[in-house]
Length: 315
Image (cartoon, rainbow, N blue to C red; front, side):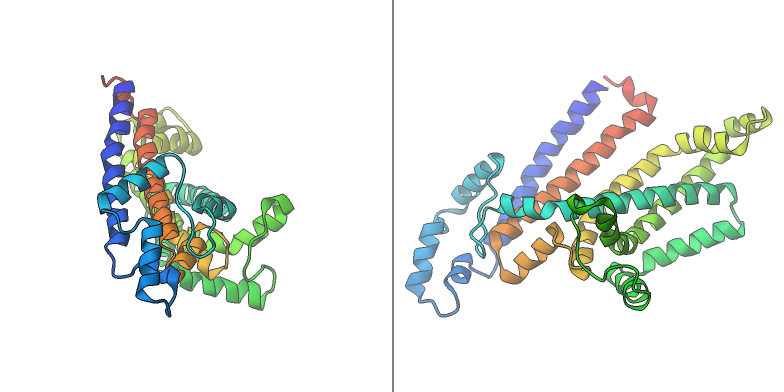
């Protein structure tokens, strides 16, 4: 198993290098000039050139890339053009809302999606199964922002039981923190509930047709032990993969959700940076999101060793 883990870890190095090169080239070969953005609309060409020299943008691209990578490896993601603050400091200010939304969303999706998919598989063809599948189709079909606005209208504007927008830090109390995340979690989590429920249902149905399930039934085991300890455990690999993919997909969903509900997280920081053409922030956020995506998929691959005994004996 140790060899498997080392191979997976080494395989991420070239992926991260290629990604960093693409992100750097995407921004530095674009039509906009960061020096011109800093100088303003009424700057003279010589002023723009001075700023280019100060920022080192007049140097060859491979030197700029090398300096940027060395800085990233040392924890220096650059400085914001708009606020002149370190990008890492800006991210630390915004990370709590994003982590909070991610944790509540994936927890909601797992706690609802796995039991719903498992019971739908056990009662395949029943009214409950059809309801789960219909809900899953609706979850896939509705865009996050549309569902978000519907929830805001129903629960914030009409019923007035939940806040329309904003975020309360957890240091201000557990209930205010959770209350500010209910609507964002529901709007973002529905698609992942649908994804996890469909995959759980398909995997458990396949497992329920195996001989050892019939043997467990013939021994008189009740339904809960069969579903939990036999069916669900052996169907775990595709379910874990789906959950991992869902966590990685949250990166794009967080950007939209934080914008709709005015959450001051990393997604909102990315949108603001794009609007302001704050290139160092955009570059850093793309890198962070991509690295997070790669690492999440790596953790999913490594988790297979917990469910597939064949991996444990690989040299």
